[in-house]
Image (cartoon, rainbow, N blue to C red):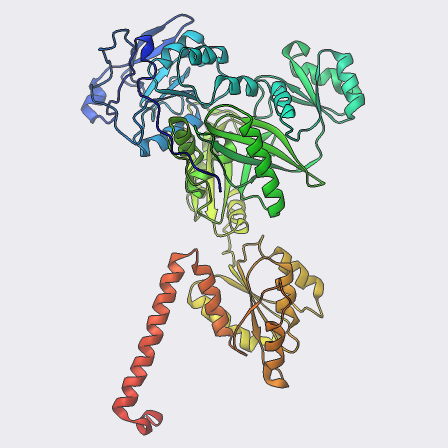
Amino acid sequence: MFQQSSGCCDSLFASQEFGFRPCLAAPKTKNAFSCSMEKQKLFTGSSSSLSLKEQPQTKRNPVLACRASRDPHVITGKDDAAVHGVADVIVGVLGGGQLGRMFCQAASRMAIKVMVLDPQENCPASELAHYHMVGSFDDSATVQEFAKRCGVLTVEIEHVDVETLEKLEQQGVDCQPKGSTIRIIQDKYLQKVHFSKHDIPLPEFMQIDDLEGAKRAGDLFGYPLMIKSKRLAYDGRGNAVAKSEDELSSAVAALGGFGRGLYVEKWAPFVKELAVIVARGRDNSIVCYPVVETIHKENICQIVKAPANMSWKIRKLATDIASRAVRSLEGAGVFAVELFLTMDDQILLNEVAPRPHNSGHHTIESCYTSQYEQHLRAVVGLPLGDPSMKTPAAIMYNLLGEDEGEPGFLLAQQLIGRALCIPGATVHWYDKPEMRKQRKMGHITIVGPSLGNVEKLLESMLNEEKSDVTPRVGIVMGSDSDLPVMKDAAKILNMFGVPNEVRIVSAHRTPELMYSYALSARERGIQVIIAGAGGAAHLPGMVAALTPLPVIGVPVRASTLDGIDSLLSIVQMPRGVPVATVAVNNATNAGLLAVRILGVCDADLVSRMTQYQEDTRDEVLTKAEKLQKDGWESYLNP
């Protein structure tokens, strides 16, 4: 287990050596009258200074004015109250997009004040930030002015003015993660060089400066050949594929030519794209979130499945590589490590983002500590939170613009309407004023008891279909002659409201069906299997050998030996193939045991089981009282 940080926060007045004090907290809540009467101001950045511009009263997203003063005794916030909260520091964020918005949401729960710098007046974070300075985050003068008001400076986008960050660090400004890390990550080629030096597994790569260099790369790596821009490449932009030498020129032209700065990667024959969110504290402690699978549409992340459906060995390898990659960088915060899983079970690093990431949106609903709260904890020096999942499975669906303008908004709202009817679904809308095709407008996260369950719910939402209830318990038997016994398990499960399915799956007559059922049960959302068998009772053991799910065997009484042969067969399974069992023909207890297993993560089932036990006790007490009162003869002959 990774050791968590216990470090203290940096001083609120980290930037006072410049003679500036940060604007302190001001209540954002205003009554209707003050909102309508008060004139708001906003900043607009220029190359050398910030100017004030009056904001119309009808503006939907008010931006509060916040001016610095070189007089350390002058504080120009809305009031002079000191900042109070979990951490006594104002966090400045370069960028106010959807990541900044969700960062502000996490900060508000901890009473930590967040300022954002973004050129868009109606950026997604503007309504939620404590202050929003309107200005460019890649303009040096603007960034320096913004930094004067912050106890710690962080980013929600890596395409910022890194030279200014490094200059501010030299002057004592607290930047997390460090400017050196942002510099490495801004240039994808430098990323590859850096991680290669730290023995992180990567696809082979090389820089290209002209067409001859590109041809040499093609001869060396073969085709298809991935050509990438070094800088300003994200969401599929800045990538081009040449399937042959004849396509090199057009691929290079599509990226803006060699003057833009290009490099090539050997094609990675991956079978899945994975991601790991890694948090690093100020004391260099590391915690990793569960590995997720990312599914892309037109090079933009469309779906994230958590946790990734793969072996523990692959998960551990992916986590180890992600952790090593982040340890090689400087500074605190959350990092997203994108990975390839190849056909031969290798893990290759694709790229790293020094901030919260699309692949971690699901953590808001599915993990004990969201990636946004974790980033906040890390940059201000709080102990890192628990990254583990509090729900068995989650799936995140990106709401991408399907059309321009109002038609796009209409399509999005229709999908949101369906999502609001899905159990376990949460809608996040980023409130961007303009709709464009493929633009990230929001996301939907669905949590549930299994990956199969949430996948089915997502499919029903996308296809406008009513989703059938996903069974949580599978009841299987080798013959319909076992059904009169096994039906009692189904009755118990129905009584407790546990969805279930009943199937005939013979280990001897339909071995392929049994094999398929056992292997697919977990993916389909089954959590417990009850297997009935008479005679040699092969079915429970063979199913248990094929699935990681708990299996409860029910010995069924046959025409000979009264089911003792079945019972003995079940309890003598070889070491490593555990099968629980109950009394002969007691499928009722099998159903009750399945309910108790599911109740480990289901408070409602625990409550129902407690009530069942109380009802059973009361029934016995009632019978005992009647026997004592009426005598045994009257009791037997009412």
